[in-house]
Length: 244
Image (cartoon, rainbow, N blue to C red; front, side):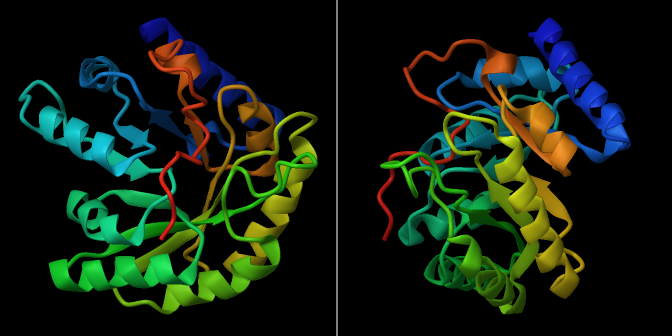
């Protein structure tokens, strides 16, 4: 895992330098879905402190287990999977950054939970970049034309802090055009919300294209942890949790 971490960071650095960007401007988010807490502890000992999960239950379990281990430094948790409104309070309680806000009702649920708990929740709006015929919307997210309005709603909600946008490239084909559209949309949102500076995009197979397009966060799982115990695309933030 130490070699994997070095390799991924080297890929990020090389992609940033090739795009004329400072490598320090691109953060690595380790997607630990289906891997045990022990694997997270190994990467944490190597200096990786940001971790993401797809499901609230798995996030809660790992966060609780690792918080009890004095050898593990304080970690920053992120939720990248689809979120039910009735689980908003649990995510807020964990202090996790939510990358997958795709509708105003979810933003409102998070804002209510934040107010009840006296917290401020960092939020990214997830954008649906489409996909091949028959897979439109499969990866989740708000339609691009709805994103500015949703960003306005998040920005106005008490207890929420709009950090930027998140998306997953469509399956198959060159991800660069999709990431280019995402970057243009992110610039439009930043014009109205200067604090929304984060762009969460890119995974193990396409992080270079995402960094070239301006991603400030790349979400990497397989390239760090290796093959997953369960057959799933764990970096894909779809999850299987139904919306509410």
